Image 1: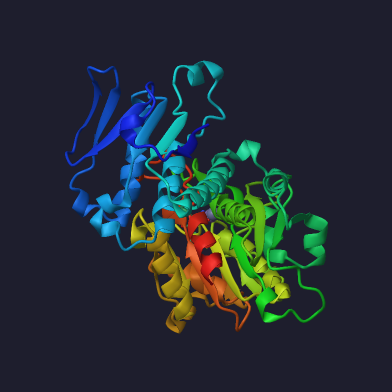
Image 2: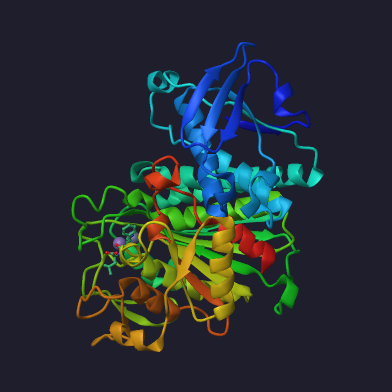
Length: 476
Ligand code: BES
Ligand code: MN
Ligand code: ZN
C-alpha cells in the first residue's frame, strides 16, 4: 500500500534512505548515487514550459511506473506548481488533487490472482513524500484526490474480477461492503421483486443462467433524505446508472474468440458509478445521489433469450431482440424507467455499450450522447479537467429510423444489421426509455473499459469515469 505524505521541508533536507526524485527537461531517466551517499533519480519529462494538463497526468503516472520498475520503495519529490507555466491558471485544489489521483492510480496493480511467490519477487512502492508543501489548501486537495483515487481503484478491483468470481449477487454483496459509509444505504432487488416491477428487459438478459439477476440500488443522502411525495428542488437526487453485465458471452449471438475473454469488464460502468458514490460519500458532498446498477450475466443455455424474441420492458414498450449481444441497452432501459421514481434532477448512464464507440473515437475518450446541450458542455469540459476524457456524438431524430421494428414497438438494433453509427444507435435506443423532461446523458465508456499503453496505468480496468462523475455531482 502506497502512502502519500507531505512535508514542509525542502527536498534537499529529505531523510537519507529516501530516493530523491529530480525532474529534468531531458527525455531520459537515470538513477545516481551521490558522493554524500544520497540516491537521486533524474526523471526526464521534456520542456517544463510544454507541460499541459494532459501531459502532467502522464508524467506523474510514468514516474510511478519508472520507480516501480527500478524497485524503489520510498521517494521524495518537490513539485511546485510554478514550475509548469501552462498549469499556472489552474487552482491549487486542481493541481494537488491531480497529483494524488494520478500517483495512486498509477500505483494500482491487480494482483489478487498472483500467487504469493510471484508477489514476493517484486518490491512495492511504499512511500511518496511531497516536499516543500506548506499550504493547507494543497494538503486538503491531496487528501481529496487520494479519496477519489482510492474509490476509483476499488472500482477497478470490482471490474477486474473475473466472471467466475463475480456474479450479479456477488456484485451486490461487494457493493454493500464497499459502501458502508455515512448517509449511504444499499439495497439489492432479487428476481422476484424485479418480476413484480415488470422489468422484463433486465430479466430477459439474465434468463440464460442460474446466476440470478439483480438491481443494485445505492442511495447517498448528503443533502438530507427527502420525505413525502413531493421532493423539493434542492433535495432531488442526481441518478447515476451503470451497466452491470458481469460477463457478456454475447448470448446466442455468441461473440467470436478474441472478443469475449475481456467481457468480465462489461460491468465497468456499474463499478464506476459505485466507486463514484463511495468517493462522494467519503468526501461528504452535500448532494443527493442515487446509483442504480442493473446486473446480469449474458449467458448461453436453452433458457437464454433468443434472437427474434419479443420482450416487454418495465415501461410497457415491447422490444424485438434482433441481436442478443445488444444486451446492455436492455438492462439499462429498465433502470432508466425505474429512475423516474426518484424525481431526479439529472440522469447519467454509464455503459460499456458498443464496440462501435471505439470505431468512432478510438481508445482515448468515452462518447457522450445527450440532447441537453448544458450537460454536453459540462461533461466534455469536466472530462478535460478530470482526465476522464469524453467527446460528443449526436442523438438526432433522424437516427430513430434505425430502430423500427416490424413486430414490436422498437428493435434493439437496426433491422438491416448495418454497422454505421452503431454507438449512436445505442444512445437512440436508451433515449426511448429515459424519463421525459429530465436532463439525461449517456456515456458509452467502451473505449475506456481497458487501459492502453500510453495511459501508463496497469493493464485492465481504468475505473473511469468515476472522477468525472464526482466533479459533475460537485458542480451540477
Ligand atoms: N459489451 C459489448 C460492447 C463492447 C465491445 C464493450 C467491445 C467493450 C469492448 C456490448 O454488449 C456489445 O456486445 N455490443 C455489440 C452491439 C451490437 C450487437 C449492435 C457490439 O458492439 O458488437
Ligand atoms: Mn453484448
Ligand atoms: Zn455487453
